Image (cartoon, helix red, strand yellow):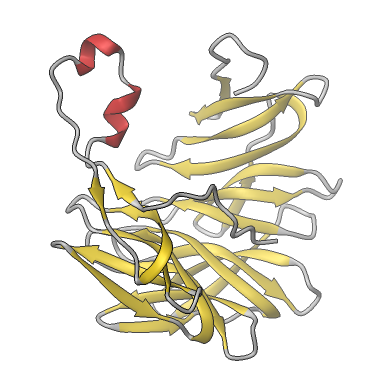
Length: 262
């Protein structure tokens, strides 16, 4: 199921060189960082979840009624994207065309994935259930996430050219898409026939199970333009998880920084 809670921040912030903060200290010497307060819609809290190469940001901001709405921050202005008729909405990702995806409540209180483009928030519907949510989008506006079926199980989907496709599972009941690249390859997690979740790559109609690092379960978060995938997996013993990089058919254990998990 969709989890919408995040660590509480008093203000959404954006740092255009955020990834540089992970570089070695010697590589950061002399670099100046600027944090910009994006504000709110009159409430106490806002969140930033996605940023594109032009510095446009999306996330969610509270208003004075203590509900929150998706926003598009651009050129110093936070634009309220509204909802699909319910009380809350949240932007999760933005591409370089300024399209935003995320989720919104509708008037009956259930949740729907949306695509915001050219001033319009489009409801991406469900597969017969009561909820859907969008997590990732590529530069062409192709979207992935999860959508509930009539049986109550969530299935990963791909939205493209006005059509939503159920990309299924490798034999289990549920799946969800969390990353998509410009080739339209999708990654995320899916239950196997043994009721264990595994990372996958979906490409040209085929869902490939990426396996694990020796444990029972794995989970993928992102995929780049050459089809490399990152996420986490249980290692042997199924009590500890490690980050992985999947590339050229091999899942590499990225280890830790001296602790037990990564």
